[in-house]
Image 1 (tube, rainbow, N blue to C red):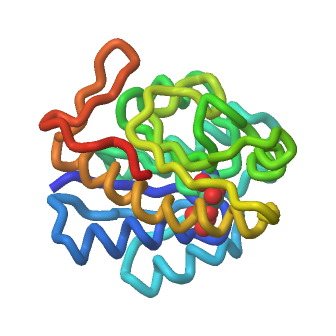
Image 2: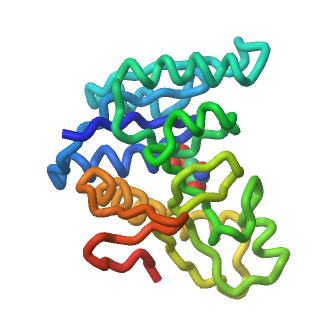
Amino acid sequence: MKRIVILVSGRGSNMRAIVERCRGECWPAEVEAELADRAGSPGLDWAAEQGIATGVVEYRSFAQREQFDAALAGAIDRHAPDLVVLAGFMRILGAAFVARYEGRLINIHPSLLPSFPGLHTHRRALAAGVKAVGATVHFVTADLDHGPIVMQSVVPVRAGDNEQALAARVLATEHVIYPLSVRWFVEDELVLEASQVRHRRGASQLLA
Ligand code: GRF
């Protein structure tokens, strides 16, 4: 069984989708713990109700980011994870942290990377007039919102779309591609070579 630790900051809908799919589809994996960078993250209560270990490494109680990163790594390593999943985790992680989990740290970003990394992606996409947006699951590298792409979803922009409408349609696709990507990881279906990720047996890595 592969061991998964999920990091969240807020709502936790992706975390929930992964836990539900993991259990419902009997993946060869267990979500061992959910950790947050702030107390009161809504996802924590839900995870605790599911019998998943929860913990908070309070970002604000550390003077320097490196100290936070070290404390977070300590909390993660207690669960000896094969995979660390960032699911709406709103902290930038330092290079040492990223190197420690190289090849077993993944993230989802609500844009078609490498377009629109960072915050306010939907607002910026609308302002740019793009005709399609989407979400990207990727391995994490020291570059914010960059790294080998596991899977992407494409969502057409409709006339009259606003940020909220777009975010909601993209989020619905996140709940499909993130669990599927994690499933592929725990089933050893992902091959990472030369900064590219392919599915070992050629499954489509695009939800369109
Ligand atoms: C998602 O849109 C994700 O792509 C981004 O943060 C949001 C988290 O939502 N990284 P949730 O906490 O999973 O509901």
